Length: 607
Ligand code: ATP
Ligand code: MG
Image (cartoon, rainbow, N blue to C red; front, side):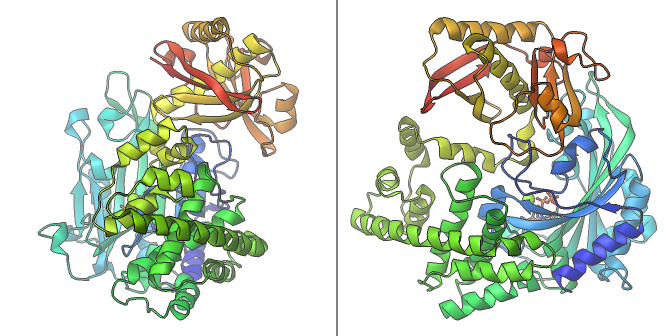
């Protein structure tokens, strides 16, 4: 089947079963400063899975454009791409296991209007329990699979590391109030020889590439209690995610996802330009990297991202630069990326018309970046050749703009080890850390929204308001970066802060923590939020309906937020803690420094 056929069959299947088909959210999350990219279908729906009602109802499905920077090193194998479409269906307190598992099985195996996969090739996994938190095995799912007719030797059980979902990880890591539950994965057996490098025997979760995960049903079923035990939720959710490209590969019974129709045009073009064939010795990995990265780059540029040295733009730049290197390895030294991208604009014109509208911007940006980088490469390579075994990655980067990852890769090819820590240390001293912000978020996704990050997010609101109180109401946010270790804010202010002013800001924030103020989320019209004078980011593009977080007064409730007495009100997608008392510790400013003209930067922690 083609990708378009599989996508259509999936959406039709779930529409027939009462699901509203919602559009793919943008690949750059809206109102979420904690992550750079949308990396799953679930991510944009988190607020609704946490209990907010969704305007489209309780049964939803879509195909979500997803990007996972953290998978960049995996690209080159038969099944990972950084960019892919995730088919998803959700029950928001509606149906549960007894509907989800039979439906998904029917979709995979029915020949009529579904995928018609051979049931013999399907393997499923269920949760085997987690003694440390007294969680029992998910015997319900196992029973349902058996009733459907899945053979015993096609059902495997794994522990919480593999088959438990929560934003915080395994049950013992979850804070009280957090929700989670077992999941059940489906694998397709591509029946290719097992590679013993990955272990003596092969099984569904083996990484050799024979069994490939094509879908995962998450059952959000429990809430962790104060005493560490788990209680069944009154409203249980289902979240299913399945890789569109992998499912298409299964319909073709070929374990290489780069052989599906999506990549045909790009692959042939690269073959013609390079003289190498996909599948030639030592060529496949390079082909796969270019095929994946340029498709991702095309969607990013169409989404408004431009190559730069920070955040999303830096990730885009990295994808482009890696592609140039790999295209070179294939022997294609002329500019080729713009042409590769053109094939994708044509391929995706029907499903995602916005990409066609950006076709010329995509080509131009890629050509510009390629030309510029080729110059850098020529200079840097000359230096690299001269340097023999003494490769100075830091000098190459600061003098020639030669990317450190690339120096590392080339050094590795030459059998030279570069100390990443040492280079990183020098870079920090050199204050070239804006890039590292993006690097840190590479590992991001939902894991980044760990409890500590959420706390810092709330502290960030307190800090901004305290700055306004001390320095004046014309102080506004000009940027922010939050990790689980610290928070950082850039704000408009022309002068260095005095020590007394810093102390005063700290005192205000600590006072608000001590006052135990409720943090309340309200959804309202943009105009209404503007009337409330809610703080918002300069130049940001907000949707009609916005979510606003207010902190305080002490007796504020969701029903009566008492905005006029609130300490802080901000446009914000969240998430946040629900009370400032959860900010356990003392707020401290670590550093206050100039960021750029008229903008100061503060780094702060709660210890
Ligand atoms: P894997 O272990 O194979 O990396 P995952 O556990 O990261 O997969 P999930 O986070 O459960 O996968 O994502 C849901 C589905 O999305 C997977 O079942 C798979 O079909 C698809 N998927 C995940 N990562 C990728 C990727 N890098 N490229 C293509 N498809 C993917
Ligand atoms: Mg993965």
